[in-house]
Length: 405
Image (tube, rainbow, N blue to C red; front, side, top):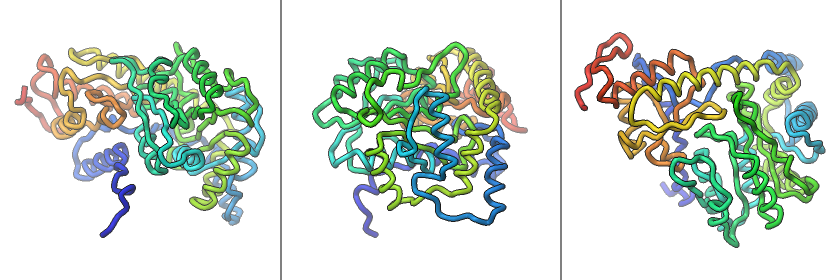
């Protein structure tokens, strides 16, 4: 079998692979705890379900305009006004099959072969792979040790004549960090002066904890949207717990949006009209579910941090939002892939290796599950790694003795 070199170089999604591994363990009856998932347990908003069902009942489940159905476009425009204090035109919006698809369509639109995209570590695992899929070059910027936010100097050192775009994810997956207003303001000014695209992945922007603040990028944009280099990516997957609905969007100048629509038309055509109707229902319906999820996540994050800080050797930075934290486990094992496999084998706890996010020695832990899974999961990790922890533990109905420390 002859496969393209490009296809062979694209890595498997580690998060999806771990989800499958956890599923297989559960099917075998193993008492696995999944601390790697980026999927909230809360229910999909009822307004989304009702809107989807109403469309289904009509029997008119057809193609839609590539850019999205009018009700969804209008809902995205209202959402942008409410959360970004920015008035946009319908021709500035493209609805896509998830935020990931929006990023792919955007990269396909912007990049020529060998163009560079600056990506800050820790980064979402798909950014480098998507850039490579359109023959671009990902340039990774790693902040100083122990920091999850770069300085402007860190970024400037990586800018070259080939730099086409910088992508920023704040609040950040996997660290939960929120980049400062000063940095976002500096990035906007720099990118607009230099003609470099600034791509803001804001998928977690509503899931910010009480002592933290997220500031919309348009606060710093001085140019008209049609002349601006700022592009915003968002979607309903995280804040509305609608991961399976796969609806995201991009907001850009009309010229860029027009080309993205052409890319989408030849690639995926349009997202399902049922799922678009559901997303429009969620965006235009009651919003109390978002706040309930945010409060639950904040409580869960505090519990996870307390559990992590209860044993020696781990360096933690409290998350300011999202579903995740990114503790440094290098005192126990510098190879995060090896450590992650060890914890699955010995403790039946699924984590995501920090190597996949550009930071070796770290593990991404998710707290969007139950309090029970958080406390028991960290207890198992502590038992597996910390010599000062009790030597025996129950995993499911079986008692295990630690014999490797």
